[in-house]
Amino acid sequence: MAKLELQNLYKKYSPKVVPVKDVSLQVEDGEFLTLLGPSGCGKSTLLRLIAGLEPVTEGQVTIGDKNVNQVPPGDRNIAMVFQSYALYPHMTAAGNISTALKLRKMPQAEIERRVQEAAQKLELNHLLDRKPGQMSGGQRQRVALARALVRDPEVFLLDEPLSNLDALLREQVRAQMKQLFKEQNKPVVYVTHDQTEAMTLSSKVAVLYDGQVQQLAPPNSIYNKPANQFVAGFVGSPQMNFMTLKCQENTAILGKLAIPLADISNIPNRIILGIRPEDLRLATPEDKYVLQGEVFLVEELGKENLISLKVDDSDLTIRVLLPTDCDWGGKTIQLALPLKQLHWFDLETGDRLGN
Image 1 (cartoon, rainbow, N blue to C red):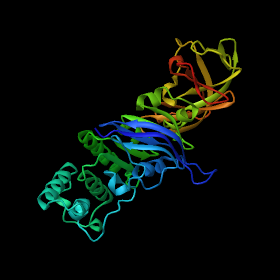
Image 2 (image 1 turned 30 degrees about the vertical axis):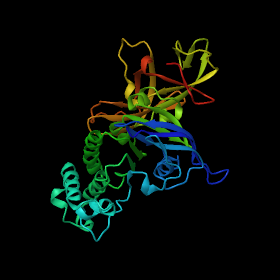
Image 3 (image 1 turned 135 degrees about the vertical axis):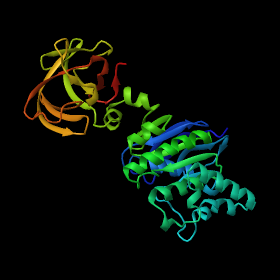
Image 4 (image 1 turned 90 degrees about the vertical axis):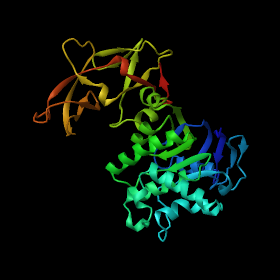
C-alpha cells in the first residue's frame, strides 16, 4: 500500500500570497485524482509540495505511513511527468527512459527488461533508437510517460502532460494513459485545467479555487451535484446558465412561472437558479413549466447547435439538435424547464441549496 495523504497543507510565500490553503485529501492505491481549476488556483503548487520541489509551510505530506515533509525529492520514490517533456536531446528514447535506472545502478538486464516493457505498453518499440528531435510531440510525451513508468514509483504525479498536444493527439494519449495507470494500481495525482481530461481520466476530482478545495468527489458527482456556484460554472461546456430570482413563499419567480422549491429549507429572499444548456429543450404542449425567449445567436457544431436567447433580463444558452438550414435568428422559442435538473445556489455564499 502506498497511500498518499495531505493533512491541512499550507504554502505561504508571504502573508498575502498563500497559493495553498488548508488542503486535506487522500489518494489510495489505484485511485486517479485530478486537481482541476483555473490558472492561479494553486493546483501546480500543490503538486510541487507533494513532490518536494517546494517546502511545506504548514501541514503534512504522507506517502505510505511516512511523513515526507523533510525528505528530498529524489528520495520520495515518486515519478513526475511535466508539461514540458524534459527529455535529454542528445539521448535516444531508450536512453531517456533508462536514465533514472542507471543512476540507481540497476543491473543492465533489468534496465533493458523495464525499458522494453514500458515501450511495449506505450507503443514505442520502433522509436527506441530515435532522439527527441526525430519524434513528434505525442511520441516525446509517451517517452516521458515511459520514463516515469520504469521507475516503479509509489506515487505518480503529472503536471498538465497533454497541454502541448493537438486535440487528436490528446485524445489518443489520454486513452492510453487511462488504461496504463489502471494497470499500475498506484496513486496518481494529475493536474489540469481541462475538464474533459478530468472527467474522463479520474476516479475522483478535486476542484480548486483560490488555493482551496471547493469539492472533492467522483466526476459524475462534480457534474450532477456541484457543491457551489463556482464548481457548477467551471465544470461543463458550455457553462451552466445562471439566473438570479426573487423568492415568494415556497417558490422562485421567473417571469410568469412560480418554480417550486420543495427541497430547500430556510428559503432566502433571492436565489440563484442554475440550468445546464443540455438540460433545456424545446417545449411541447404537454410541458407544464415553459420559458419563452428570443434567439440572438446560433452556433453550429455539426450534429448539434448552441442557441443563445434572451429570457426576461438574462441570457440563456441551450444545446439542441436542430436543422442547420433553419434561420433561428430573432425568432421567439419556448423551452421546457426540467425541474429535476435544476440547481439552486445561495446568493450570498454561492453554496448549493437542497439536494
